[in-house]
Image (cartoon, rainbow, N blue to C red; front, side, top):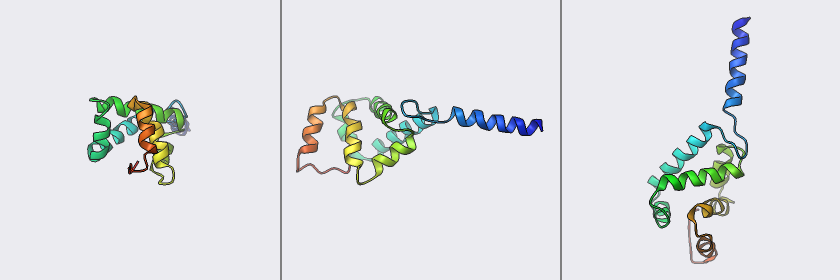
Length: 120
């Protein structure tokens, strides 16, 4: 009986320590977001160039993006799902990214440029 109680208590503690809420993601969610963001920049030359136009420190940029996602989404899973949904990806992604680029007016002009074609 003590073993069952310990297992249940451990499960409750683990679940509560690893849960994310809007504005306060779990450490695991934030680490996954940062790792995925850094991997995405490494794999996507267009994104790497765009980020490089604004900062030499890609890690700071990724952390900024993840912190903005944390403010708007309940978990990294929800944020990742939203920015990868083709119907809303560009709008949602750029809204999150703009805050990290620093020059929101430039990005807004870029989004409104009918000749600009992006996967984001």
